[in-house]
Length: 343
Image (tube, rainbow, N blue to C red; front, side, top):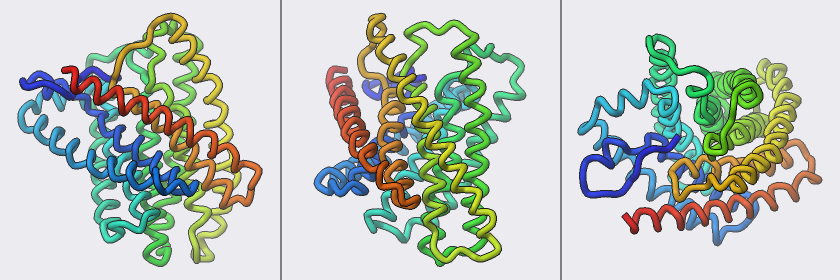
């Protein structure tokens, strides 16, 4: 999933810059949010500060690449392998918006962030799917389907989370509440459809250790952010009576999504160990942030769901997952800087 380097003096690194680098903001922001939810404020604020600092830098690099190498950007968007990575921008917006609401910081930006994210979601998801569908040259399932395809789910649910955050701050208007619900259900449907494709790819096509890379962890992260979106819907106050029957569907479906997300963790851990034993591990790769994000999201989503569903026996799970997410984030962050400084 990752092929570009973010360091160097010439234009080649910018031409090949990985379009999914906003996963750095996603991973850092969600680990910060999990730290805040679990009352580790000494960790939460510095982490969120790093996410805020990285966000404009990545936008500058993306715009510079678009201006200097527009054909390379369009080629990436049409690519089955790299196209879905652009949706990390929408997901990063959703994570930052959740952080603004949780930290009570820059909350006045939430309306603009939501509408900006909605416009980006429409542009990127239909641009990619349209190009992938109408293109004459297509890869087969073995070479075309990657873990990055689950970003369609993550971006959609991130927009649902943003809609819920905005609805909560604006008196739960019916239109915005319905939009959050519709996005949640759409993201859930995409998740179920893509999981069928993932299982088909894994069980009926050859899988080498090199192909079992970090972005496959998004299959767990997509379920986790769907759980978070459902939990935020269940927590909305003052919902209009005519919308309550629709929201009753969210409770059992969120259990399904949480259980599905939990199911993937042991299997993905087995695949990761198998890859290490086969000596297929590599150095730093920006795709590694795609493995950090699901760990942090699972911690935050499980905590939120345990609170809103009044299930205190689930609380030890996010406590453990948070420290695993923090360890993964720290290792990846150090590896990134070592990679950049070495180059």
